[in-house]
Figure 1 (cartoon, rainbow over the protein chains, first blue to last red):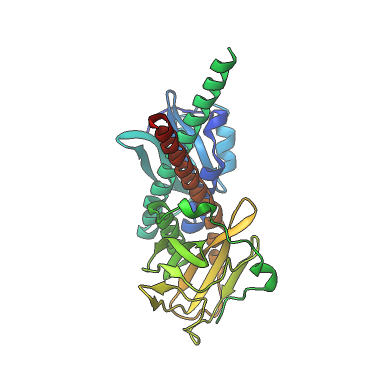
Figure 2 (cartoon, each protein chain N blue to C red):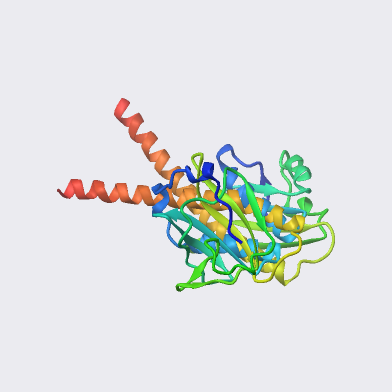
Length: 141
Length: 174
């Protein structure tokens, strides 16, 4: 939990993953849902939604530890996101007060499935776009 | 109760472009989140395919199709809430499980849109009638829609790329 957070790169934030987080908040009553993408410097925000999200946006302007970032949350549940054997990020639900129950945890496991699939798809599409761009550039040169 | 299909909505073109989207564990997961979040008995996600709503995601049910609906049942971004469907079980609005009608006491459905056209629907179902739907049902259903649309779009895009790559390989081999 001690990894350093950094500002998400332009291409790291995803509207679809924001929507996944919004669904997570609606389905669990959480105050915050976040999907992160693991990069060289740590976790970057790939998707986020909830009433605690505004504070998080401000925090993202600075480099903070996860403990600092979650200081205002009463309870937190998180799962690692994987593509194959590789950890690629995390999905997290946070609440100001009260613990998460079995139903909320079941939702979190499903959010993990959806977020992993969406991140994989976005990675593939980004790779293809990059390859196409390089090919065009090579042809021009 | 029959989910109303207005004359205007009947003109919506049946879209086959997304036929590549198959039953998906990811869409199952979206349905399960919706079912749990809204306190529904089951949930489903369908795509219109050759005059049938083909189920591509589901939770709490073995539903496979809505076989007799002539097209998308909803207009753009509309949601329909049917609180008491129990009295008229054998209607076009009911889903089929292995050729049998799935009992549906109440339902809340929303249109799925792709490139400006309704291509299917997302639904939450209850086996009993519901006197009223709470705000959480509306909110969860509204939030499910963009996620399901994004998943379908990604899967369709990946499938198109795979098909194109295969065709290219065939040409190279040619």
